[in-house]
Structure formats: C-alpha cells, structure tokens
Image: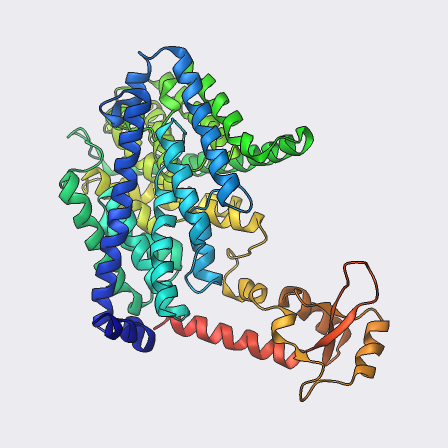
Length: 544
C-alpha cells in the first residue's frame, strides 16, 4: 500500500485523486506539529512564569517580581543561542522566508536539521517572553514534514512544492483555526500562484489541520469582538481608505525597524567580537528590561490585541503600546531569538486602528461606528502589508474573529495598505528578507531563475564532445573573459551580451592565487536554452 502511494506521487503527482489522501495525511501530521508547538509554548510558559492562562500573560507578569521579568527572557535567549550555535551553520532561525525560498529554488525542500533546531529555539523564545509570533516556526516545521516525505519518495519539483503547500496550509489552519486562510496563505505566500492542480490537495490538507485544532480547542475564534462593530453609514468608508494608508506606513516602519535593528546587531557583534551564541541573550536582557515597566510587549500579545479589539484601551495607551511593540519585535528579531512577524503585526495593527478610530469617531461622530471596527480593520491592514498577502490576511482576520459583517471596511483598509507598503519595500517582509540575502524572488521567476543555474552545471567539460579547443579558451582567458564555476546566469548573460562571444571559458582558481585552471566552457546557446526551459516549466506549473 505504501509503495503504491509512493508510485502515485512519483509518477502522477498531484493530478491524481489518490494524491489527496496523501495530502490529508500530511495535513494531519503538520496539524499535530502545529498543535504540539502551541501546547508546548503554553506548558513551558506556564512553568517559567507560573501563569495558568497564556492569553493573560502580561496581566500576570505585572504581579511577578521584576528580577524574574528581567532574567527569564535573558536566560531563554542564552539557551536559544546555544541551540542555534550547535545545530545551525549560521546561528540563524529558519522561518517563512526560507520556506518561500525552498518552494522557488529548491524543489519544495527546506533544511531539516536547521529547521528542527529553529523550531526548538522559537519554542524557547516564545515561552520565555520573546516578542514575536508562532506562525513563522510553525510554517517551517510544516516544511520539514513535507521535505521528509519529498525526499523519501524522490518527488520532483512540482510534487515537492505541492506537498510543501499542503503542509503549510495545514499548519496555518491548525495554528489559527482558519482553514480558508491556511489554504490561501499556502498559495499566495509560499507557492505564489493559484494553479488549479494545487488547490484541491492543499484544501484537503488545510481541512485536516483544522480538524486537529478543533478536536483540542473547539470551533471558538481566537478573538471575541463586541456586537456593535458595524458601519454606521457608507459615508464612513473614506475613513477606512485613510486608515489603510496609515497602516501601510506603520507596516513599513515595523519592517524597516526590524531590518535596521538587525543591521545594528550585526555591526555590534562584529565590533565587540561577541560570540554568536551570546547575541540572543543580550536581546533577551534588553527585552526583559523593557518588560519590567511594560509587560504588554512580552509574548505573542493576544491579551493586548484583544483589549484593542474590544476597546478597553484608551488613546494614549494604544499609541504607546504600538510604539513599544515595534521596538520589542525589532529587538527580538535583531537578537536572532526566533519566532514570526504575523502575530506582532496583528497587535500593532489593532493598536493603530484603535488609535485612528478614536480620532475619526471624535472628528465625525454623526457618521461613525465603533472605534473597535477601526481596530479590526487596522489589524488586517498592517498584517496584510507585512505579509504581502492581502487575500489570505483578510480571510484570516475574518476567521480569527468570527466577524464576517464588516468585510467592506477590512477590504478597503487592506487593499490600500498593501498597495502602499509593497512600493516601499520588496513586496513583503519575507521577500525583502530574501532580497537582503541576495535571493531576488520579488521580481518573479524571470529574475530568480537566472540565479538557479551556475556555469559549472551548464558548461561543456573541456574533454567532452562539442567543447571548444583549449587554445581558443586560453585566448579568451588571456583577455580576462572567463567565469568561475559558481557564477550564475545573472553574471553570465551580461558578459555574453557585452562581448558577443558564443562561449566563455569556465575556470577554477587555486587557493594559492595561481593561474586559473580550465574546466570547460559555457555556451551562450546552452545558457539560454536552460533558462527558456525553466521559464516554460514554471509557466506550465502555474497555469495547470
């Protein structure tokens, strides 16, 4: 039976009905992984802080001695640093950006060993008060599940990516009790296409993940809203247009503050020669120092988000907590402590929307509804701009709150915020992360596929049929026209365009700096053929 299932996956892939049963199995596995991660946070957080209800962490933290508030995040950061130092090559937590990269450039695979270490590090971060969210590690954990299956059956790129989409959809659905949003998140953010062949299995997996969540928590939404959240009049919609623009700017500030803080952290680490395992502990100490006076910033932040959505915060509290949360998230991410940005963006958005709502309803009381409606719209608008995912974010806001009657307000705010923010960053937080690492996925396959091919892979070896003579290669090398084996088509194609040669020698440079050794030659026609074939396969997958 297992062999038959593997044959279906290898030969037929996601076009067969049998694949849906495999998708359901992956959905169950990813759902249990997400559920286990969430319950693990609750258990460890309870052990560290002594809190019974993790959704009321900051209220309980106000009663804890300040020394514990200071030390718990610092000690958690130290453990995180040691875990990442031991089990990852670069002491960096893997998250959603790495899953997107795996889908685009690695046939739907992610790093397994580093992924497991990252999940453990993020579990410790969130349990000890790190100011991030759980969706990042949960998505990468799902990627590890899909990678294990893909490697086991030797899946090709299309099947591997669809398995990855199934796992991600199930994990998001199980984590947030949001099957529609989980499905759309996998398609919109990870696979970055809406191909029909992927929709059915991903939906099946998302439903399976949701069932796992509801068996444990029931069908209760994450947030409970007041019952008077309704548009007072359609004339109020222009205010939500303006809210969308404000939220777009806030989202950009949040994203850029994280990147700026990471840059500062890198510079400090270089100048002080700080051991990389100590960096999360330093950030944890700073986070704990902030939390002594403002415990609202620690943890995922559901209590403060709920307070914003129910209007129990006043104007200056909403503004101050919003600013402090941005600082806390930046500090946590700069310390490479782990976690995601979705939950923090929900909190920042809800606080931004509530503050805006107080101003709007005070200025135009006759045509205004409740301030909490602005908080709901702001929550979706900031999160959508950060994720670069207006469709799935709109749906996840509806599913997390159970409020489907305020769709116009949320959609208007989300559309404007995403449109503005995508022009000020590289489309989203995750794609900007990849851009900073030299992975140009934001520009589309016509750009990132160039980086997927190297001269060493596409070259004709010097002793193979059709290879140019060594004398012809030596002449070009003497003119300085050559590639190293790891040169990509990003570097190669402009050289062909500039010099007009039909081929360029590929060389290996000795470590001692001696004369380059000829390996073979990259032909212009071979490079264009490989690039054209990859583009055609990508287009076929996205439109099948």
